[in-house]
Image (cartoon, rainbow, N blue to C red):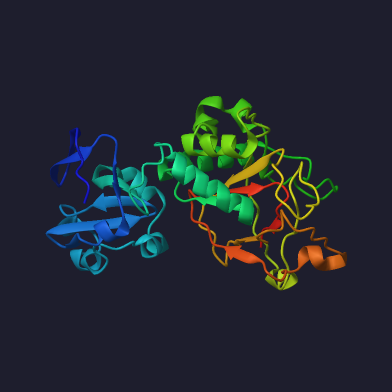
Length: 311
């Protein structure tokens, strides 16, 4: 377990304890080491809580907490608790974030790591940075997405006489809209270093977008379909060999991609091979496609000529 330093004292009804001012970073394996009533940690929605001193006062009894001690109890917690519970009462027990590993993503990759990543990118047409952004960063962006949705009615809103406007889910020019909030999305050194390897020494931001897709209620209507194979703007039909792209797309997911939420689909090497789709092929699974279940905080960078689709 990583030590927390520079702590400050927080007082709660159940006692006094030390927590890190910056928040700790813990893997689920590290959380699992604290699985008794005398040392009880719990992970909920990407946050880690030390509830050792709270267990005896838990309204539902300490036994249920002991049952989930050292585990990710997000599903069970959210099933029976109001979302405001943690915000109102749980923060004094929060000790940090859940991470997949202790990689420091603010440290640039080495020249050897960048060279290996670029070689794979040229071969496959994409590369994935795992856990590039923290839960704290992503939560701020989620809140901004919700704020903009609630305040906006867009060009695709219903316009019939008996229809009410719907929320817009797609917001471009986010660096201009919220520069302080969104700067950390485009200033990550690993993104910038790799961008220079792909594009050359002069890199310019085309656009930064916050986007969401509303749920599809009629599941039967989309069975056996994909949302739409495409190459990105500035992409073109490949000629059989690698060409330095005029741009690339970096997609960061703010939620886990599952079968329910819809994974990303890509066709590796389609930035090299002149694959043309005809008729309804653009909305169907393709031979050789790869289904990618990215986690929240992961960033995938794709060549603009790579065929890809949502689910």
